[in-house]
Length: 82
Image: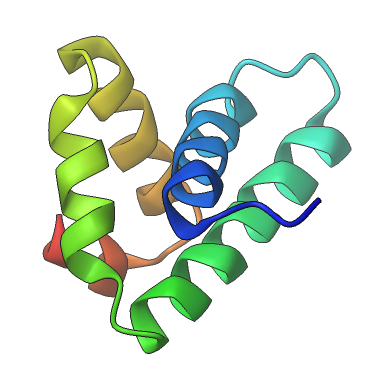
């Protein structure tokens, strides 16, 4: 079953938020890169408002985690949209 854009966005932000907490650095990098790639694709499809809506619904602690991971991935263009 294919995920809709809303579910996909939630999953991507969740994965990005958890990436920094991984015990294995390789897994952390893989999760971060995968999430960033999907976020870029969603932005390219014009889903930035959906990403913002979901990001803004996150708890402050999770927002910080997501922004930290975007900084680690050197993706200021994505974090600027949020």
